[in-house]
Length: 331
Image 1 (cartoon, rainbow, N blue to C red):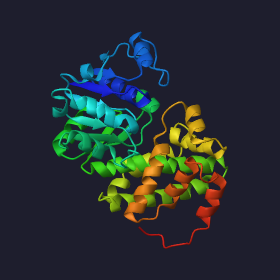
Image 2: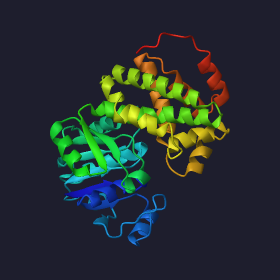
Image 3: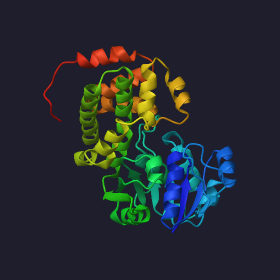
Image 4: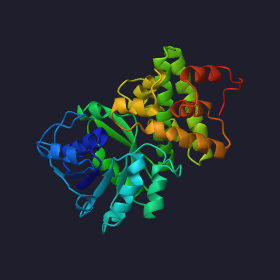
């Protein structure tokens, strides 16, 4: 296949290399001109420390060039930048007639939409839309370490194409037709990961982390059910699987972001120190607002949002969470 990859951050570049390694001809684009020039010279990616050399990867100077005459499009831009990219793609003839793969994990700030909903809002169709999500770090995938993810989709046909294109001996892809549930799992786990990073930074111990993961998953499932998704999706790879990964490793930028917040840094200062977009920092406010609209209690999400926005110190938020009225442990 000829596969287009839009966005060459760590994950986008990792997927471009992975797809090229699977025998596909890849054409890739990024808005970052300096990065494009660096990769064009055969130099390593600044974060992944890998190059394009020896792989069938062509670098495009524009979205139009990248999306013309392709068999599949894979996006790996930020959630914030997704809508703008989709508007550009919509102007390319035939670009929406091929399977489209989302990988961005977040909720749009202005609309509170999931990424599949943003796609439908801009492009007006669903049948060829899919989403790859699950517990995966770019460095490990690039080193061909065993990884399992899920492919969410609206329709089975598109899902089957993407599963076949991405699957390899070290990269296992499971199909799931609850694409919005897959999207919510990948988005909300980032918020809980920030909470775990804060707890780690405050030295609260592994017991506190276990409690945050367990009760955080409880909030994620409640949210997904209220939003019309299947609860079992959140117990799968895009929910529990990705939650476990990002809440237990310093390789997670959301976890590191939480650690930095615990030291008193602001959102801007912490994200600047990490050097990359932290999706959970923007998802938390949207998730908090949506929980109010759904009339469901999400105290961990609300606390993270308040800490990120500088409304309350991390240590005080922990005290407030521990003093909440005790309820039965049930969904």
